[in-house]
Length: 378
Image (cartoon, rainbow, N blue to C red; front, side, top):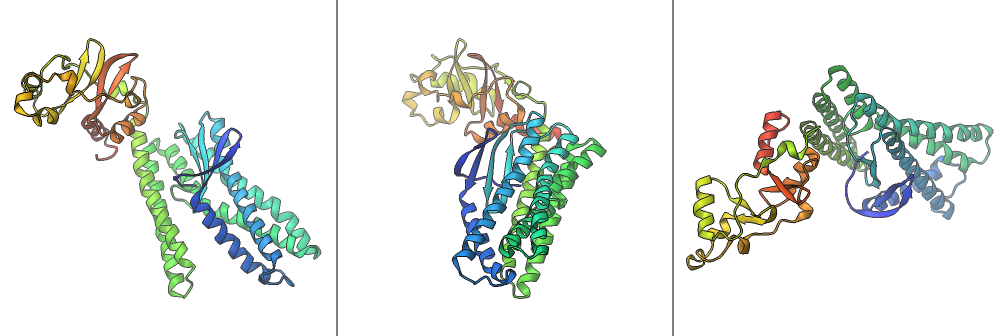
């Protein structure tokens, strides 16, 4: 499902890194404790607090989390079938997430990737439930039978919860795929699915509030899950708007060709009078020596100089070097370009073709681009 924080990398499976986020350990302990408390009520003759109860509770919890991991691998391996890489799979406080590298290109891909996880969960529910029910009917191995049936119910609950028709749950993604297919409008489909996610979140918070009012303090967790889902639904809508706005766009489409550059030997006063003031509201210009980008010259740095230094300090001495790790190539995709520029402290980032500076992508131009696309407001 969802999540994004640092954690403990535990290895790779099918070439995909698996990570346990720190909040997962609290959830594991809580679920194991709840199972150990309830097992004596479900299995006759099982003593509360005995070592067997705690081992069984921890074992059932481990099976559940392995099932959750299998659910996420269902998404990841289906995405791989469509040429979409999965960066990592993470388990955390609210479940799990397969973080795929990009959004699907078609409604069919979206539906199949979203449906693969629930399909794994319902298959595991059947695989655990069939032998568990057989043992219960035969009245043999009551503890093992109860553990199998419980594992089946946990997977069934995971299946049903993920089918709720709201983003970012699997049911919400399948709803988006259906609306996308019917309308041909990815952004509209995402907004509808995000609204579904908000409706589901509100419903969970109301159920939790009713439970708390009836004296069930564990319903506070339901309220918290609802609040968390609402945040994810809203952010998912905004992220999808960005994805739609920059789909099939490259840095070359967003950049401005570099027409005004400051020669390296230009004095600070000359830079101010010959370049910045005639250009008006320009606060930064590239300093270029032939085709080599020296750095960026900031207007505020010149204006902060002592008057006696303005006439002899040169642009090459005042230029702030660009971090080449933050530079862009003309073929850099639009969303990566947007995130790089917005994440930097500069007003824009340079675009290099090889070692040659060919343009600048400015923060202000990105905002105007988004306005023109009517995807989101900056």
